[in-house]
Image (cartoon, rainbow, N blue to C red):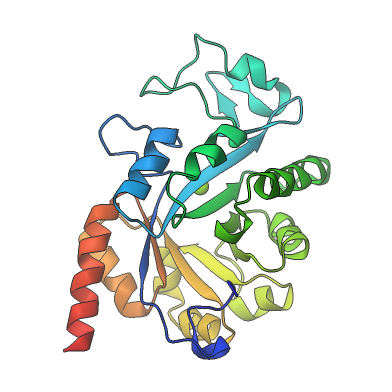
Length: 256
Ligand code: MG
């Protein structure tokens, strides 16, 4: 059981806080944000998970990229082959990864969770095309047991929870209390750390419902330490090795 496995709700002992590399471990040598190199670097350092952003192309394919545009091209209006042309490159020289290629590479680190963000402005037609394509790709690559969905689109979160009820789904928006999300079948919050500072009570509320608390994008030592004190389960960060060290210290202190 994935959902709620961090809490006593399903009878398991808490696993302790974990690190999610934001857009992969893109600060590693030879990597770039949302590149295959950044995914593999996250696996290499033993991160709990690697986060990445997924967009639907104009011809119904999926690519890994943060923005809705790539080198000035609107991804949703551009065929995959045009985005992957030889002259357009990421900063590390890679061609923009197709989701298929990305999930294939993920097989090299089978313990690494795939924190899958669907980029969406909430357009129903876009989501009606994108979500089934995401689910189909995940199933085809046999990685369903490793995927945790995140999105700023509440409708996409609801739909992922319906289509893949065994997978964790975390809403990113920061504007809804955990109990309300829980009613919609959403199993986690993934909020900017300032939201958790403003609503520290949401951590216990989420945990009481068996939901996971993920925080983004926590890069400074003091902020990481404070989120650990507040009870965050997952620290999404551009500094995964720093977060790993601080978690080890935090966990050792708690055992004393
Ligand atoms: Mg993202």
